[in-house]
Image (cartoon, rainbow, N blue to C red; front, side):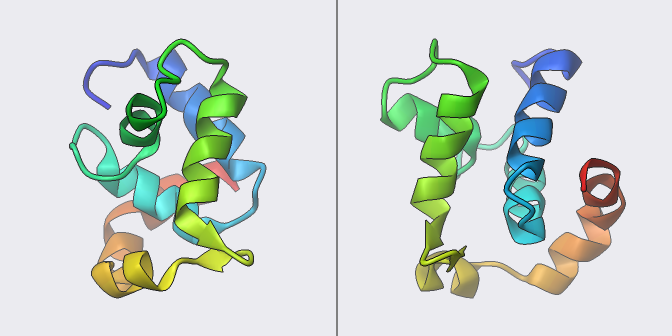
Length: 95
């Protein structure tokens, strides 16, 4: 999230960690600073840029999950092993 301060980034990741879903964190870490579906993207899509962090993160989680699991269309797009290798240590810090 190149436009966010470290404290804003940490707040998003900390809030996201409350959902206890490692794949959500891995996806968000991979989306960091990019234009594909991360918290900033979803917040922009729903005009929530000025909403509280928990509301922005909730919108992202709703977009990513179906019945508590990563939606199939997102699951098939992700190389979870590569995301784990690249971002697993950071995810561990938040979970």
